[in-house]
Image (cartoon, rainbow, N blue to C red; front, side, top):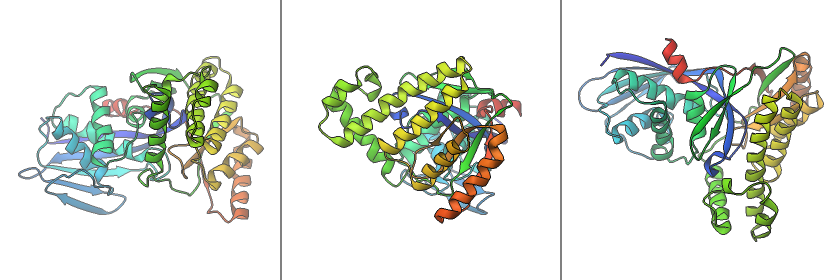
Length: 367
C-alpha cells in the first residue's frame, strides 16, 4: 500500500457508432491526446473524501457519499463510492484533479476523470483490479452514483484504446478488437469545438434510451442489436409509433455502419470511411434527432471544403464534430467554418487535430 499515487486517462472520440452502446451494439472510438490526471493520497481519519480541481480552483470535503449528486466532483466521488460498494477498503482520501479534456464537448471528459480516479485508487490501495473491473467501477460511478444511464463505451475507450488504433467494442459481450487507425500524412482528423456544450443529464439521453427499450419490447428482442440490417424493413413495419421507427432505423443502420467502417479501415479505403461518417451524421440528424444547427453547419462546411466525411461525435445536442480532411485543406476549412459561423451569429468555433492515442492503463503503466 502506497501513500500517494497518480492515475492518468484520456478523453475519447467516437469515430462512429452513436447511441448504439446501450442498445448492445458496436462502437469504434479512439483515445485522445487530452487527459485527466488524478493525484491520490491518504487522508485523515474515518471516511472523509477531499476533492480539489486545478481548473476550477475549488475543493469540497465530503463526510458521506450519497448517490444522486451531479456536481463536478461527483465523477470523482462516485468512483470512491463504487469501490466501497464493491467491497474495496477505500478510507479517508485526498484527490486532486488536473484535466485538459474539454468539458461538455462530447469528448467524454467525465469518463476520463472517472477512469483516472479508478487507476489512482487502484494503485494507492493496491487493489490489483483487472482492466474490466476498472472500467466497470468507473461506469458504475456515472450510472449509479450520478444517475446518468450511459452505456459501456466511454470508460472502456478511455482505458483500453491503443495508440494508432481504434477500439471495436461489442457492447453486449464487452469484447474488444484493436483496428489499425494510422492516418496517412495526406489526411487529418480535425476536431471542431462547436462552442455549443452538450449535456447528457438533461433528459434527452434518457428519453432516447427509453424509446429504444420500448421499441425492442414491441419487437420481442432483448435489444435493438438483435435486429439485423436485412430484417430492418420488416421490423419497422411492425412499429406503429413513428418515433420508434426513427430510433430503430438509426440504431440498426448505425451498427451496420460501424462494421462497414471496420472493413473499410482494414482495406485502407479512406474514401469509404468518410462516406460512412457523413451517413452517420445524417442518421443522427434525421432519425435520432440529436444534432443542433451549430454541428449541422460544421458538417456541411467540412464536406463543402473537401472533407472525405464528417459527423457529430458524442451524445448530441451540441459538442464536437470530427472531419476526415485532406491535410492541405485544413486551413481553408478552418477559415470557411469561421466565416460561416460568423454569418449565422454563432460563437467562433475552434478547430484542432488529433490522432489515435493510448488509453489510461497504458498511460499509467508508462509512468
